[in-house]
Length: 243
Picture 1 (cartoon, rainbow, N blue to C red):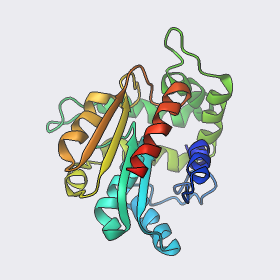
Picture 2: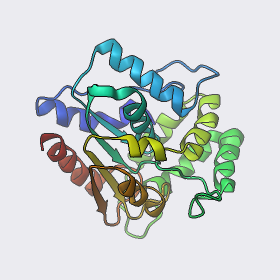
Picture 3: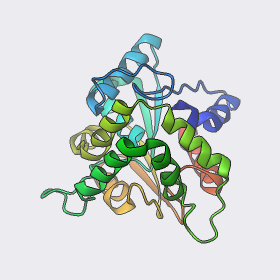
């Protein structure tokens, strides 16, 4: 997904007097689609270049899913005294993939399947992925076709190389040391029915590593920020920024 995913939150924040900026990471949305640099270190360096170009200070960083990893790495390795607070939702840290040091993680085969789906027929892959992404495959789910189609639209804006490489970036990057290095307040939000980034492997572990953390688990909420989950999360984001 790209910066367009945050339009509701950007309006909410702007309506309350804050300056709200969303960017499209390289390979995504309206950004350039370079062959190289589709990795978490470069994503964070790109964000640092944007922040420095605009000379942004007293920043509250907000990131969802892969973006949650991006803002954590930026804050730990580039943020310095520019960052005031961090907010993540359904974020990938500390590390997703299963390994000898992370036996509870997701097997690499699951991420290989994502890469295969992107290569074979990415348009259909994104249409299918929208259902678990928003929890539309659950009984009683109320997710509009429009929301699913917008997920597909944003996915189709990603260049093939960027999409393929991003799988490794979000699944294999280890953010453990980054989380330990954070010294600003962090709000960690996660749905307990997240089918994309399992709660136990991400937010619960993150909360154990960060010095000053507020963890909130949203009952029944999926990975995608939508509906009642979005309304509750947006209220909490605004409250955390004000606190």
